[in-house]
Amino acid sequence: MPPSMILFDVSENKLNGEIPLSICNLSSIKEVDLSENNLGGTIPECFSNLNLSLSQLNLYMNNLHGKIPESLFPKSCSLRSFRINNNQVEGLIPQSLVNCKLNDTFPTWLENLKNLQILLLRSNRFYGHIANPKMASSFSHLRIIDLSDNDFSGCLPMKFFENLQSIINGVEKKREAEYMSYEVSNMVTYYEEALFVTMKRLKTKLTKISTSLTVVDFSSNRFNGKIPVILGERGSLKVLNLSHNSLTGPIPSSFSNLSELESLDLSSNKLEGRIPPQLVNLYFLEVLDLSWNNLMGLIPRGNQFDTFTNSSFNGNLGLCGFPLTKDCDNDQDLNPIPKQYDDSRRELNWRFSILMGYGCGVVFGLPLWLIQIIEGVQQKYVERKIQLNAGSKKYS
Image 1 (cartoon, rainbow, N blue to C red):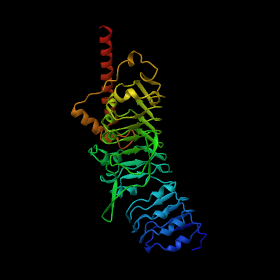
Image 2: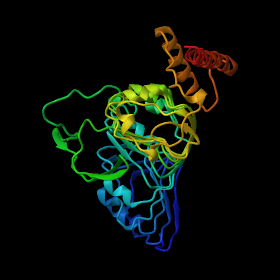
Image 3: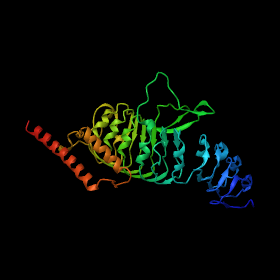
Image 4: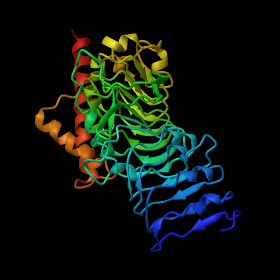
């Protein structure tokens, strides 16, 4: 093979044996595609010599095993697409992968990593929709996921959030802090690589990661549609950032179940409606940013909400009340009335959220007009209650 070769594509054949090391001598190569063969062995470490010029490396659907070499992604990495799904590769994903500005769709092969706890793909060029996982066990151990600053689009993946079993219930409080670890050759090793996570508006460097830290950051993408109600059932979530997208609809009142939430950023979207008054029960909430949306009505008062400043609510022309200088008029002078449901109604709403979560504005099993009628009846009930209360005050 001449060293000046730019493209090497032998995909969709019946090649076997190991990957020939002679490929590593292709100093000008841009794309290597060995996918859909029967190649075995490990990924050659000398592939790191190619990544100064290599933009695409496709190894998927082979019989490769072993670990991904840490040296595969040097600091001057030019790799934009790396596909390795449907192999027997094991071990940790090298942190050096951050040296490459990947330009690809969401790597669905990650759902095969049963013990994955941390997934950081921030500040790359990933694009397209995130498909719902095929297996119920996929991503069940994931505690920290950061997809921020990419070009993902479409609805937020409801099934993905549903699978986050590790952040459903609060971590049992213990006297001594516990840190994330993994097992290699029957030995427990603590995860001590430097990790950068945006928490409470600050980019924070972590050298040890507490098992109680849970983060979901999908900010600075092009996601649209409503926020899945199921997110409010991830009870031990500490940090939630969905800012700088095109999300619509109301803030789910189910967020009041996020009892351990410390930072909530929904800014720079197209959210509408009132701020759920139940959110005042988030006693650990230190940072709240709802700015630059289309929210309206009286800002709830009480607990942590009394500590937030104008910056948490700026850019919502319909909002009024403390801490803003804009007073509420007669119709806005009452706190929004929390909707009260019995257990059967709560179950009904849960079923609606499951049915509606698979697509923006698409309902499976129930016609959209039925949902709209039920929501309309609920809204008229609330408005009627406000009018009755206002009338009783007027004549008292």
